[in-house]
Length: 204
Image (cartoon, rainbow, N blue to C red; front, side, top):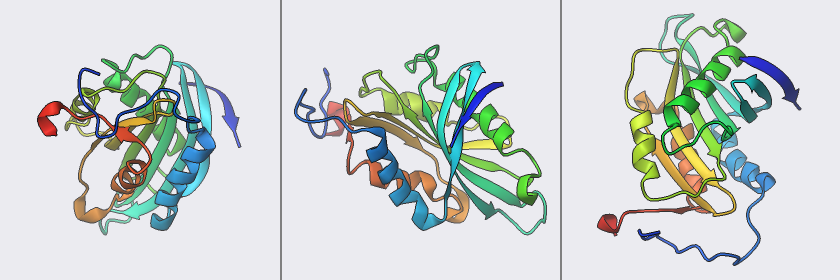
């Protein structure tokens, strides 16, 4: 990936969105929510980066060192949260795997094996800012993206898609051993207090 720059309703909802009811959330408001969830678990902010080919705009990273087991090299791991914009060439109705692969490659490059003496797994949580409306089917599509695949260094643990104007979100989470990666659940808990989630009528 080429780096361009670094930067320092046929279904119901739990709460119906009313068009124009107020000012949409801005990114600074979002970062305040994200940091309120991540700082207590020890995550540290790191500047994002922008890639030209394939296009990807990582707004921010949050990183936290963790240890999976006693082995000195492979046991030292990272927990990484990447806040990204939806790329213009990726439609999320069928593009979640493509986006996940793109972000995983960026994270692997930013946190290469050996950085700070850590050679092991990267547990990845993605927050995707999207202009596309969020609907009832997104949770299911995203969960399929997190289905177990062939072993890779970057392991997706959480995918949270946010539309700031719609004030809506969709998410998919996986479990981690012994709570070693609390970031996905912490973010989900914090964001669901501010964003609406769509649910099928079957779930109401």
